[in-house]
Structures are given as structure tokens and as C-alpha cells.
Length: 85
Image 1 (cartoon, one colour):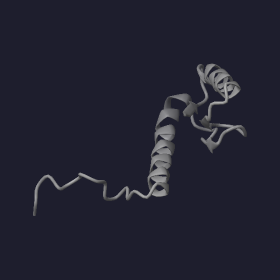
Image 2 (cartoon, one colour):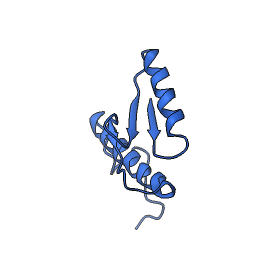
Image 3 (cartoon, rainbow, N blue to C red):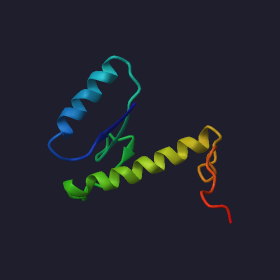
């Protein structure tokens, strides 16, 4: 499970949820600012821009996961050119 805990009004609730999940022995990857983050977000980004930064981290995570399971992110199965040239 991946938890996004960007700074803002929901940060405390997300942190509490992560604690509850880990108490139940769930594996949670935390994307957040601060030292407790598994994947860090910059702390100096304003709240309205935080989702953009988080999306980039999500894309980086998806890319690395694809590589680790042996997939080629630049050549996904079933993807063909719409217009043959």
C-alpha cells in the first residue's frame, strides 16, 4: 500500500491511518515530507503545488517497479502506433 502524506490539513489523518495499518502489520510505503518518509517529498513546496510533486514521485515509483518486475516502460505490451508510417 502507498500512502501520500503531503503537508496540509489531511496530513495528520493520513499519518494516523498509516499508524493504524502498520499496527495491523500492513506493509505501507509512505510518500511524505520529513524523516519518516520512505520516499521523500520536498518540504518547501506550497500545499496547492504538492499534488504535482507527488505525481512525479508516483511516476518515478511506477517506473522503478516496472523495471524490477522485468517490464520495459518504454515498450508496454499491447501498445502500437495509432497511425502506421
